[in-house]
Image (tube, rainbow, N blue to C red; front, side, top):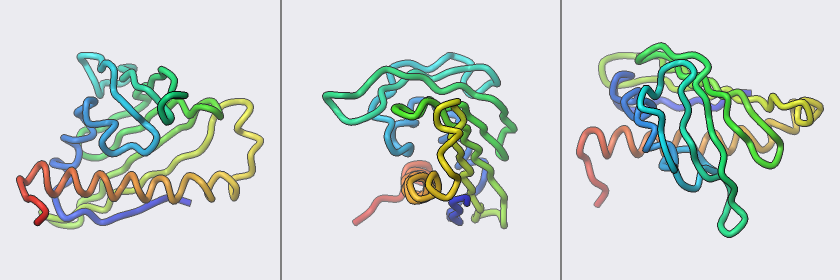
Length: 150
């Protein structure tokens, strides 16, 4: 099951956040701190290096771009400690000039996690990805457009 949200801004503006590897910890639940971003992020094969998990047990990890279409798609091979890795696909579907449907599809992809039934994965991943989309919405609408909460 995917998490979906309509965000009140353009796909271009949303993709600007996805293309800023330094913003990763601001919208990805579980990413505690971005340590470094390859200069060509989000080109296919580029990586960002981050810490995962709560302090003091967080660990250094990385995420690699698998596929990318500016303004439309970012697919990542994300390290998903403690279960190994996950494939995350973020798609942007423009609805009009000021609204975009954003979808996050995620599944655990490491050898040890592939045996976890999809229904159990969804129990954790769907609510997490809904929160990711809420954070992405806040960044896209309030940071990019300069709107502030009162």
